Amino acid sequence: MADDDYVYDEASGEWISAADAAAQPDASDAVEVRDSVGNLLADGDQVTLIKDLTVKGAGQTLKRGTLIKSIRLTGDAQEIDCRYDGIKGLVLRAEFVRKR
Image (cartoon, rainbow, N blue to C red):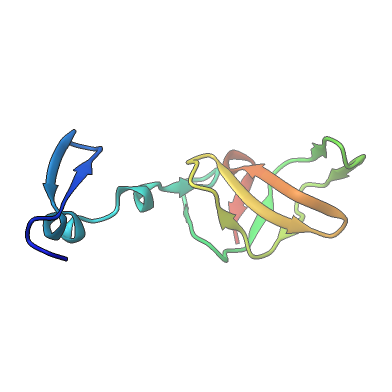
């Protein structure tokens, strides 16, 4: 990049040099997702359900104690994306899970 390149910084509302922008940490990664007891969750963690949950559209209920493997964070502080047999696109609220 040339020294005369500038980018708009949405956080500060100002135009800053591209070199300064590259040096700043990315704020989108700053979202912390915590489970029902306050443990910090990360991509790939295993979680256990703490209550029975009825899954809308799937016609089934996930029972308390069900193990969900390999979660993915969505960028929302209260939602996690996961896979479970027979249910596609399952999104759970972090308040209903506990880190294993």
